[in-house]
Length: 215
Length: 270
Image 1: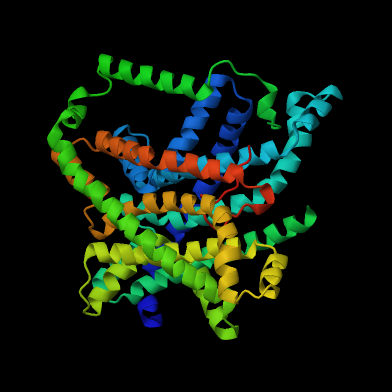
Image 2: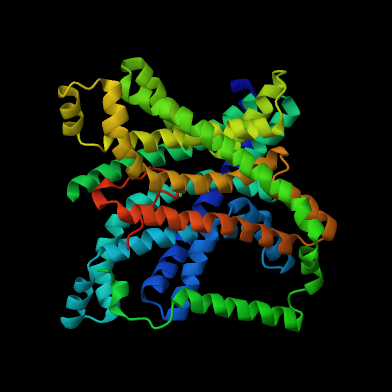
């Protein structure tokens, strides 16, 4: 297996880089999207909040693989993306954003509404009250479940290679397997993913335990 | 309701309003020709649905078999992890953690390719069921374990001191209570499993997505077909998620179970 890796090291590393890129970019975008959508759901006018709800329910309930196939084709036809990687990042972000929305929303709702009212009556503007009173408390409850979403996202990056012509780590492993007929080509891949997901899982577990004490 | 959403009163359901807006937009799209009607026409043919129906059956078959297998194996893993000593427990913990940290698609590719390279004949569907069972049994084992451990120690001690055996305690005292607490998480996982059956199409299983692919290649309507497939999955999974939430709402907060690393096992307030 070490030999197999050594012979294909460059190819594996390029796949690993692509996987990391998908993960990091989609995580950033989905957190941004999810935060906005959560704000829409909680504070938005009826129609906006309704659209945000449909967004969450629809994208959470449908398979990511089909979503990615859809965006890959749609965005390419519309000339909005230049590579399958870009389409993959957008697709992963929209899907993951739906989960982030729910996490952030429950974080916001975990802060008592009276705190916002109190802050407002003390003369803070709505934005100031959110910024200095609600958000700092919401962030604490949001971090561990957000870590869960990040772990799932790291695993979901594998679907980009399956749906679109992107060469993420798993796709690279598949190509090497089909060349060498050695299933260990995939064992190398699994180790690559574990290198991302296990440290994340440990971190999330520790945060959870620390939070449990803090409460 | 104590959340901030309660601050404002709503006359019309926002979701309903948004659905209406989307429906009007779609209708306008058809009328103005922005949405090409001829690409949607195949969905009016009966042959389309008789073609796709076996795919849905395969999806249900794979999901159902994997679910049954995962429950049996998951229970075994959970009991073994709680009841067995030292090295066995350590092995199970390691196995469960490793499997849950591995992408399902990688597991499916391994269950599909490895036996073939070793000369074992395994059909695509079997490989998919085995792969999905391996992953989901690990997740369910965690859910079962969390459910069993959530029952207060005092109840177990009381049952044992009343003369019930360990097995009787499990059967008559712990499980009946634990099942209620586990149900929301199990239904959530069922949704994830249902979505994950589409991954079987990557290893050539002709389930809903697999047949959908041939279908859109024939009619040249990938966007339309994939949208219809998404709607089919939504029609199955959304009611399930409502069930899961209703079950969860019935549980007192401190009795709710979440499993780390699963995107659907997110606690949702309100």
